[in-house]
Image 1 (spheres, rainbow, N blue to C red):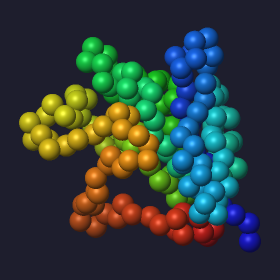
Image 2 (image 1 turned 180 degrees about the horizontal axis):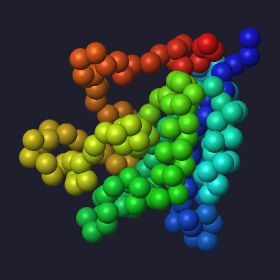
Image 3 (image 1 turned 60 degrees about the vertical axis):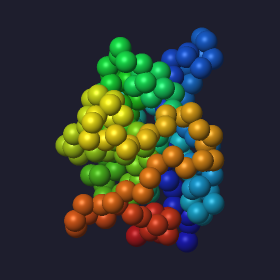
Image 4 (image 1 turned 30 degrees about the horizontal axis):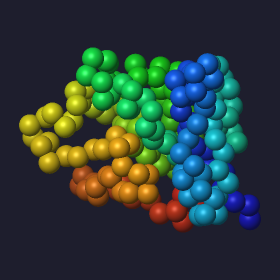
Length: 178
C-alpha cells in the first residue's frame, strides 16, 4: 500500500521577502507533519493557468490549505489596506480557491490551517468580518497573534464545532487511502 499524497497550498510573494525575487513558499512544519504521519507532502504551485491547477489535483489524495504570515502581517495588520482574503494576494487566492473547489468536487479530505481555513469558509459560501477581529466589542477576549510569537508556540485556541458539525480529523483519517 502506497502512502497518501498530500497537496499543500503555497504562498506567493512578489519580491517582498527578498527584493527582486518572487517566492513560492509554505511553512516547513506543515511538510514535516505530513511526512511524520506517513504521507507524501507535495507543494502545490501558485500558477496563472487554472487548467494547470485542475490537473495538479490529479496528483494528490488529500489537501492541506495552509496558512501564512507574510501577507497577513503586511495587509491585515496595516489599517489602511483592504482586509478581504482575495485582495491581499489575488493570485494566491485564485489558486487556493481552485484547489479547494477541485478537492471538494473530488470528495478529498481537506484540512484548513488559519488562512487556509478562512479561504475554505469563503469558497463554501461562509462569511468573514472584514474589519480587525480584535476591534470588535463582542470579541474583546479574542487574541490572534499574527506571527509575533515563535512558531513553536501555540497561538490558536480550541475550536468548538456547531451542533452536528465535526471539525476534527485525525492524521490516520487524513492519510488512509479510501
